[in-house]
Length: 250
Image: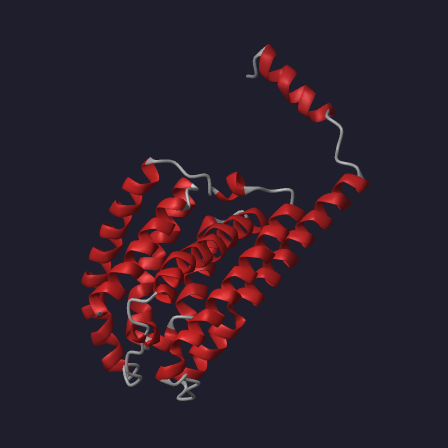
């Protein structure tokens, strides 16, 4: 049996005006605009990286000479800054802001970022031996590991890359991709899957076992962001990961 209050609520819902055709059309246009904006940003940001990575797995290499490695990463930095500028425009067109992407900084983000890096690093170290053994069993280990940024040395371009790259990757492939996919599909699982698959795909140049192992890190980052909607701890964890790699390499 329904109480009087429940019956009143049911009646109010039943008599509430339905969305007009114009309102539904506006919502459809907004969803289409957001989807187009998402596709454009991802295409500009990652198409070349994905294609180059996949071709390298297939045995086709486009490697810069060591003498030009600094020039390569200067071009990479310019590309990343252009992609971030495009993202800012698309976010503005969508009537969004930094808060929408969870990109408002808090002091506690540093602590959570360090803890997130420790967790991700431990999971990588635990998962890598199993992934490597599986790849060897399947014959996916034949592409040797390749880390061109390790050839940079500890120069100004290295530190610029270590600072900009985590912001570029995490803001676009984590915050923007997950937020927009969640808004368009309503599924956090699909959003996390898309984010992890895309980020892993353009790391295949490192070698399949290493890309799959770092995919575990990307999964942890994606789940954390999807649950907290805070991107700065992820950026900080990624920054520590990249900085630690370059310092250890030299």
